[in-house]
Structures are given as structure tokens and as C-alpha cells.
Amino acid sequence: MDSYYFYLFPLLVSVSLAYGATRHELMKPILEHSFRFGMWFIGFVAVIYLIILMISWSL
Amino acid sequence: MSKTNPTTAADETVEIDLRNPAIAGALTWLIPGLGHLYQGRFAKSVIFFVCIFGTYCFGLSLAGGHAVYADMSPAPKSRFQKYFILCQSGVGAPSILAFAQRRIVLSGGEPVLGGLMAPPNESDGSPGYEFTDRGTLAQWHYHYHRFFEISTVYVTVASFLNILAIYDALAGPVVAEPEEKEEKKKAKKEDNPGENPPDGD
Image (cartoon, rainbow over the protein chains, first blue to last red):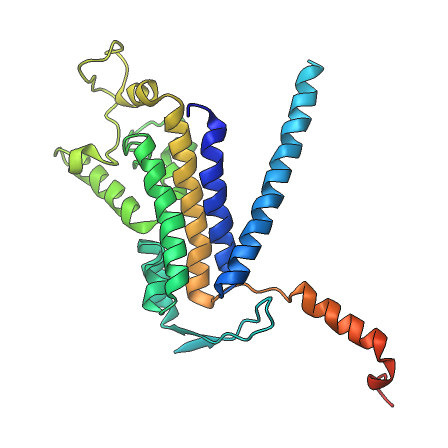
């Protein structure tokens, strides 16, 4: 509960849903787009995390 | 009465009655989702209210309501600190309260609502803390430690999200041409080249 990462996921859900809602009007496309955006964001953050991790190994 | 006809990924045309977009935008700025409720877009109203206002309030609660305040110090450490309230003003109702609290404190009064979103008084040392020679802001950081930063992030993200919601209330959703529709058009042209003669024939 004290970890920063725990607080990332509610924010991610909120951002994904809000962003999806600004791109569509019907519920189904909103949810689909939100899910795709959320997965993309997790992947992006994971890549950045791995890059920073590899950099920290060399320090 | 403004209307827009976005095309969804399901190839359905949805007609939206934006009513008065300016009023809808202003209501959405005040409370996320209120403008969409005014327009009759109930599902999106609920989504924006729960996601944006919920994020804002949850974030605010992590730091006891202190992460949002209108800085009143005459010589702030940086311009960033002084104008940060502007980044948090994407949601109107709470930021109005923050500015109101600043006004009350500047005029010598006591902040209302238990000091919610009241600016820190740098010269005051609250009882019960060891660092009585430090200002109120430092005490908040000491008391809430990492949650003060997390709270700031939550509130700022919610504020920026509300800008998107305001645009949605003003002009409807930003709909891009669906990829499936493009692919279907291409496939149809390739399958039946004879049905689509080049221009000029």
C-alpha cells in the first residue's frame, strides 16, 4: 500500500476511461479504446522502466 | 442548438445535441460531467464525473486537502510553486474554493471548512510537531511524506483531463476515421476494381 506503483493503476484506469470517452460517444467503443490505451500505456511505462533499470545496472 | 455527427468504430452515426456548448463547457469546467448531464449525454457524464472528479477528490484526500492551495507568499521559492495552482485549476469548483481561502487568509480571517485548500502560513508552527521552527508547508510534507507528491500528481492529472472533457462538451468527441472502415474500403476496391473506374472515364 505504501508503494508508489500501487497508486499508478487507479490513475491509469481513470486516464484511459476519460481519454476513451473523449474519442467516442457510444459505450462499447469507449471501453474498447480505453482498454487499448491502457495496455499501450502499461507497455510504454514497462519499456521505460526496463531502460532505466538497465542504465542503473551500469552505474 | 449545435449538433455534430461523429462516426464511431461501429460504423454507426450518432447525432449529438450539444445544446449551448458554451454553457456546457462552463458547467464541465465547474464540475466534470455536469456539462454532459446538461446535454443529456448521461453515460459520459457519469464517466467523466467518476473518473475525473473522483481522481481529483481521491488525490486531494491523500494529503488531507492540502495539495491544492493558492500560494500567497510574496517571495516564492520559484515561479513554478506560485503558479502551480493554475495547473490545478482545470476543475473549477475546488480551485474557486482555493482562491476564496487565499482571499480569506489575506484579509486576516480564519480559513473555512477546516482549512481545506487553505494556503500554508509559512510563519506558523502547529503544535504537536517536532520541527516547530519550520513553516506549515514543510510540516505538511513531513506529515504526509510521499502522499503529498502523489496527491499533487493526481490532482494535476485530473485537471488536465478535465480540459479534454471541456473540449468534448464544447465540440463533441474527437473521432478519427476508423481503421476497420479504411481496410474495408481498400479490400472492396481490390476485390472489385471494375466497379470503381478511375476519374475522367
